[in-house]
Length: 231
Image (cartoon, rainbow, N blue to C red; front, side, top):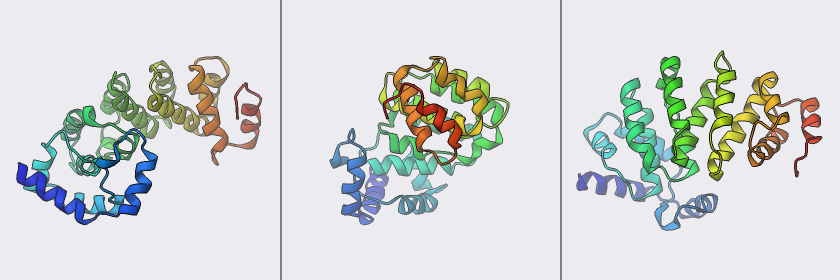
C-alpha cells in the first residue's frame, strides 16, 4: 500500500504548478499551505480517468487519511467514476469524515446519483444533518443540485432551513441553496427571506448571493434590497 501512495504522490508532484499552488492556497485559509501541491483540476481529472478501476486506483481509495489536498481531490474524482450507486455511497461514507475544506467538498458530484433520486434524497438528508461541517455541506450541496426543481423542493427548503448553521461553511452552503431556490422556485423560497425562518447570518448571506446572481429578475432583487441587510 505504501508503494501505491508513493507512486501516486510522485505523479502528483510531477504535475506541480507552484504559481497555481500559491493562488489556490489563498482561497483556502483553513488548509495548511504545506499540504497543497499545486495541481490543476483538469490534470487531476485526467489522472483519475487513468486510475479508475485499476488495482492501483482501488488501492488508493483505501488509503485514508491522505496527506495532501490534491490526494483528497483525486480521491473525490475517483469516487465519481465508481459507476454503481451503492459503491459510490459506501465510498463517500468512508471519505467524507476526512474532507476538511470547501473546495474538495464542492467538487464532488457523482453522476450515478441521478439514477436513484428517491433513495438518494434520504441519504442527502442524513449527510445534511451531520455534525461534521463538510459532510453537512456536501449533503446540502447535493440537495441543491438535485432537488430544487421537482416535487421535493418544498421539503428540501424546510430541511435546509432546519440544519444548524453555526459553522461558516455550512451557513454559506445553506445561503447558496436558498439563493439558487430563489432563482428556480421563488414562490417557495421567498417566504424564508421574509419571515425569519432562516438564522439571520445565513439569511443575509443568501440575500447577498441572490443580489449577485444573474438568474434572478430585477424586481425580485429590488425587493430584496428593501430588506434589512448590510450590502
